Amino acid sequence: MIHIFLHFIIPLLTAKFFYTKNWLKVWGILVLTMLVDLDHLLATPMYDPMRCSINFHPLHTYWAIGVYLLLLIPKKTRIVAIGLVIHMLLDWQDCYFKIPDFYWE
Image 1 (cartoon, rainbow, N blue to C red):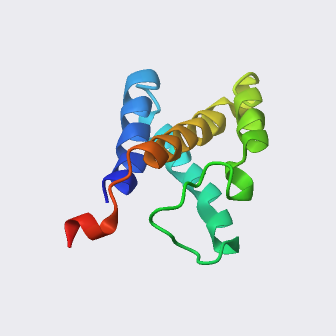
Image 2: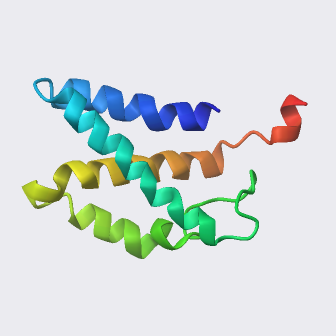
C-alpha cells in the first residue's frame, strides 16, 4: 500500500514544487504515467508481491528506462518523462526495500 501511495504523493510533491502555476495539470500527467504498469498484464502471475518489476516487464526494462531518460531532453516530452522516471525509481526502490506480504499477517 505504501508503494501505491508513493506513486501518487511523489508526483504531487514534484508538481507542486516545480510547476506551481500548473501543478494540477502536471500532477494529472504524472499520475497518468502509471499506465506504464499495463505491461504487468503480460506477466504470469499478473501480480507477484516478491517480484521486482525492473527488467522483468517490457516497459520496465533497462532499455525502456534509457528511452525515458532521453525523453527528459526535449521540452515537449519532459513532463511525461519525469513521470516515467519517478515511476521507475519507485519501482526500483521497491525491489530492494520490499516487506513480504506475509509479514503483515
